[in-house]
Length: 347
Image (cartoon, rainbow, N blue to C red; front, side, top):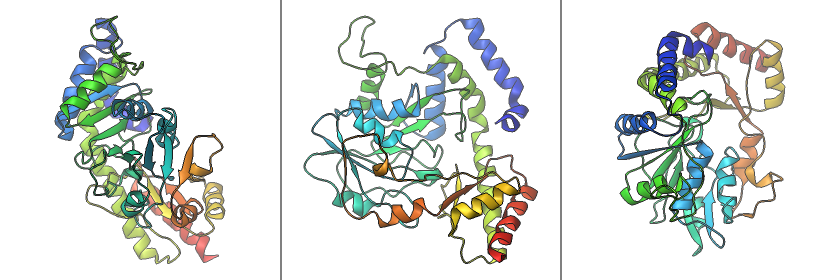
């Protein structure tokens, strides 16, 4: 994060000073300007700033009227917020298996999991890959927390996270909802401020989902750099692919590629994943496991059901290993990582 920010530190400092001088810290001109700039940059009619990626999901599902008695179909291979946002509204979380290539929600499995009670489908553009969407008239809410810039909004809405480690990260929590639907955008703007319109006149039960002006200003400073950072991530991924092709490691399965992939993560599938991770850690190479167990195995006690087999997700949870992919990762570092993986499988 620091290495990424250092070249634009003066722009970040200027943005922070601008907010301090203006004295408007919640919503206001900075948030409105960010929304306009995001919408323009991402080719969508509306960008609605909210307090986090989780709240972006929660507010969108609230705007769709999701509640007790409803079902929402989603993937079991994601961060907990994807399912947790559904469960918080009293709806049943319905899990369907993932695609063996993309690791995203399998469209056929998702459709097979739908019933007359299904209110929406929430695919996740996992690790920056734009998920294949099921062909349906049901509302589709793309969880795009990891995939900003990975092509246009294809569902009714897409939700973004600006958590500091995301491809476009704030200095704290933040999020946004992208949509081309005017009515949905209006409803979201109402719900993010306790359903008040005008102030102190509450016409709906909403929440405190407002975006801080400070985070909006920082994001405005960083947004013009996003295309360059995305190109650097894609170049890093391409170099990894070249290195692994030369290494000829049949046990290593590379992530699915796509022209719009933004490579929030570069996730391998490998046997003896935990052994390999310890081997790399011993050499000072940081890796991460996304995700060690499927969401339907979490002990949170949410109302959920699994429809269909989960053979793919069960296997992937034991194989997935994320390598460093951030924009400032140098070619020598990537070569070192692949050599270390070669050494492990040569033992």
